[in-house]
Structures are given as structure tokens and as C-alpha cells.
Image (cartoon, rainbow over all chains, first blue to last red; front, side, top):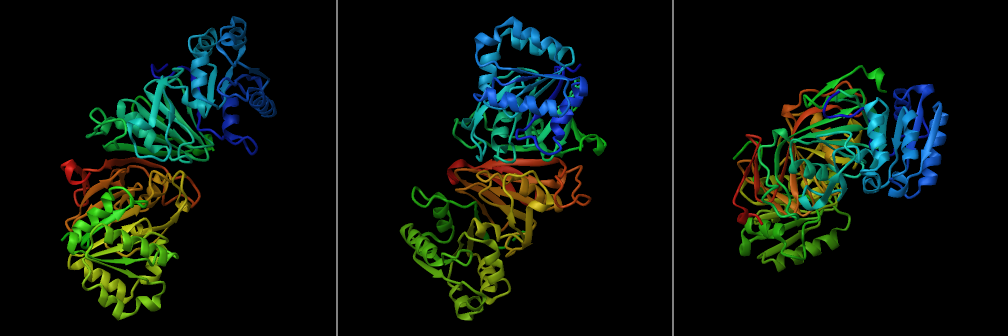
Amino acid sequence: MSAKVKGNLVIIGGAEDKEGVCLILRRFLALAGGGEAVVAVITTATEQAEEVGAEYSRLFYRLGAAEVRHLDVPDRETARSTALADTLRRSTGVFLTGGDQLRLTSILGGTPLAGALHAAAGRGAVIAGTSAGASAMSATMIVEGQDGSAPRRSIINMAPGLGFLKEVVVDQHFAERGRIGRLLAAIAENPYILGLGLDEDTAVVCDADGLLTVVGSGACTVVDGLTIRESNVSESSAGDPLVLTHVTLHVLPAGYTFNLSRREPGAVRPEETR
Amino acid sequence: MSAKVKGNLVIIGGAEDKEGVCLILRRFLALAGGGEAVVAVITTATEQAEEVGAEYSRLFYRLGAAEVRHLDVPDRETARSTALADTLRRSTGVFLTGGDQLRLTSILGGTPLAGALHAAAGRGAVIAGTSAGASAMSATMIVEGQDGSAPRRSIINMAPGLGFLKEVVVDQHFAERGRIGRLLAAIAENPYILGLGLDEDTAVVCDADGLLTVVGSGACTVVDGLTIRESNVSESSAGDPLVLTHVTLHVLPAGYTFNLSRREPGAVRPEETR
């Protein structure tokens, strides 16, 4: 297992297809065991937990899961329940819904449930997250940011995430909301960190060796700051526009891969992902 | 004079400050002769020609121009008037307003007025354009495109522009409207072409040697496709997401330069541009 990735992850840019072929959700279920999949849906990120939990439960049953459990965890009190953590032991897949990534980390962080999530990932359960659930996967996450802006330090706030994925920052609803500026602002602060921008209805499946494979109808944009030659991030005030030269950018649609360790794109056979 | 650039250009990403310090418009006027500037405002791009023409006329007078003429050219009949073309002879600056770039090229293309514009640029008059006026400057221009999308061939239409700037495609309202996808789609079709994405209230001043200097509150994003290693643009259908790897991207705020011939960013003294 790569030091960068814990378990098998499905990181979704939000607004995944739930009515058509459901390619991304089917892929998650297949990885989680197909007809034998035992899925836990964690709705901590959203304040509409009941509605969202019911929707994904129906969906995963319709797509053939053996068992779906909605874990309604609206506060730290609930997240501290060891009984709840125990219910994750049999799960082969965990799905983190959208909402607010800061709810996910502030409610789950340091609780037995978070520990059980990491244990599940460690024994090979698939951890999926969409939108806020995607953002929260990385060790450092974008909490909030301004869309449609040139990169400036002031347009993003970052915080510690759930830590399934290291040395990466994930942004979602990427093309749709014009978020290249905030992702660039994030990697500018530490160019060793790779920026992953996931479009809606687009996911990367990340295996334990750190190989990402793109699935879905949009693209995964990778911004790699290792090649940056000039940056003013440390001298600039928060509101100043940043200068960043020689950033390397990859746009990867379905079928393409990205190796996190080698920082290199590649291709797989398209039929595996479309 | 570089083969890439005709004259001195001020290429503005739209929504330039018209009420505060008016940095960009002042810079244009200074280049056009300051208190001696004779400015022609061409409102062909917009269907609100009277209103827009009056606004810029007031503005340039307020900023100290010696003379401002509004050239209301709503159709090819007017653009064919040699008398109108003659009025450009004394202009030291020409300002192309926003609107629809296809109006600019379809109405002006091949007329005596377009010839007079090129003659003016050739003798050193400053040609400025904002929004649609900026897009129309290049030899090939983006006519229209879809905002907030992963790059696909179907999201842009291109057409021949006014041709003051070669080997470059300009996009405007860049960060604000999430246009990196459409600019990438444009350069994918011919990576020799540089993509310039101009944020609102941001301009590049382009001298006759092809040195761009950024002015204003946002950034100029340069996408350079020369480093692209993998692209599927020729094999893909119009609606397929494109793959593009190893694109080089520069984000350049005020004070920074870009040399079109060497394709290299650089810095100037900030006080010249802020």
C-alpha cells in the first residue's frame, strides 16, 4: 500500500448521475463487492440527513447492494458511540455524501467512528465521497473558497481533512464553478501538494498504490506545482493576485490514469471506465 | 516590429474600472498621447452603440483626452465609407468596445474602416479592445463558447479575427466565468497558438515587439500547449471530453510580463503597472 493512500477510494466531483446508467455509483458498488456489497451511507456533511440518506439507500439497493445502512451522525455525541463504529465492521463500502466538509471533519474528527472508517479503509473497504465528501478525503482540504477568481491567498481556507489521501488537495464541481483559481491558490502554498479538480459527474478511483483512474462524463484536472519557477505566495498579502509560472496542468477524461507517486498521467483501456 | 503584433495593443478582459482610478483606461490614454490623445471609440460590437459610445466619450474626456470621436458603425454600409476611414487618420488611439465579437468581424472585415484600423496600428496608434473587442484582436478568435465546462471540441466556435495579434487566442471575463476549459479546447486544436485568459478589470499592454505587460486587478492566465505530450483532439468526437497532458500554465498579475516570441514570463517593476 502506498504511503499516500489508505484503502481504495472513489472521489466524486459532485452531482453524479443518479437516474441514468449511474456509472460512478455502479463502479463504487462493484469495487465494494457488487451483489455482496454492504454499504454504509454517512450523511454527516448534510443538514438534510434523512432525505439524502434515504435517497442513497434506495439507489444502492436499486443498483444491487446486499445491504445498505444509513448512519445518521449529526453530532460528535453520536460519532463517539462505539456501537455505531461497530456497525462499520461488516461494511465493504462507505459513502460520504455531499454537504459541508467542515461538518464532516468537525463532527467525525478524532471519534471512534473516524477510527472505524480508517480501520475499514485499512482492511480494504472502499471509501467513496461526493462533493464535500470528496474534499474531506485528503489530509489537508479546501474548506471553502471563492469561485471564479484569479488565485489569491484570500480566496481559500484550508483545514485538516479526514486523511485518506495524502499530498493531494481535492476540489469538486470544478469546471462548473470555475475553481481553477482556488485550486492554484491551494497548491501555491505548497507545490509538493498535487491539486485534483473534479468536474461534476466525474470521479477518480484511487487504488492502494496511488493510481487514479478517471470515470464519468467530465474530466479530472491535475495541477502540479513541482515545475513552478516563480511564485510570490510568501511575500504577497492575502488579497494580492498571485503569480505562478510554469505550472503543469493535465486534463484527464474517463479512461485516463494518473500515478500519484510518479506524478504522471497515463491511459487505460477505455472499456474499463466508460 | 514583431511579426506577431501589429502596433501597440491594450487587450482588456472586460469590466474595466470606469469609476475609480481607471488604471487601465488611463494607461491606454497615456500610451495614446495623454493630453494630446485623439481617441476613436468604435461601438460596432454592441447594439447599444449610442449609450456605450457616449459613456466612453465622457470617460476619455474626463481622463484628459484632447479629442474623442464616437464612430457609430452599425453595418457594412457605414464601414465602407471612406470618409469615416479618413477620420481615423488623426487618431492616436482606437477603442473597441464590448458586445459581440462576431459583429465586429462580420461588419468591419474587409472594409475601408478595417484597412484604416490596420494603417493606424501600423503608424503607431494604440488599439485597445475590451471584452468582445479584446477577443476580436487575434488572427483567430473565439466566437462563442460554453463557460464552466471541461474542454471539449463542441464547447467553442472559432472564426477569423481582426488580426492585430497572431499566434494567440484571447479569452476574456476569464476567471469570473470559468473559461479555462474553452481556452484549453482552443489551444488543443493547434498547440502552437498561445491562449491568453484575461480576468475582468485586467489588461495586457502589448508592444510592437510582442512583450505583454499585465495591468489591473486580476490576472492574465497564459496556457502554452507546446509542452503537450498527449492529446486526443483529432480522434475525438465534438462532444467527447478532451485529454491534454503537460500543458504549461502561467498566472500573471499586474507587473508581470510575457514575451510572446520566447513564450516566457518575466517581471517588470511593479510601479509601472499598478
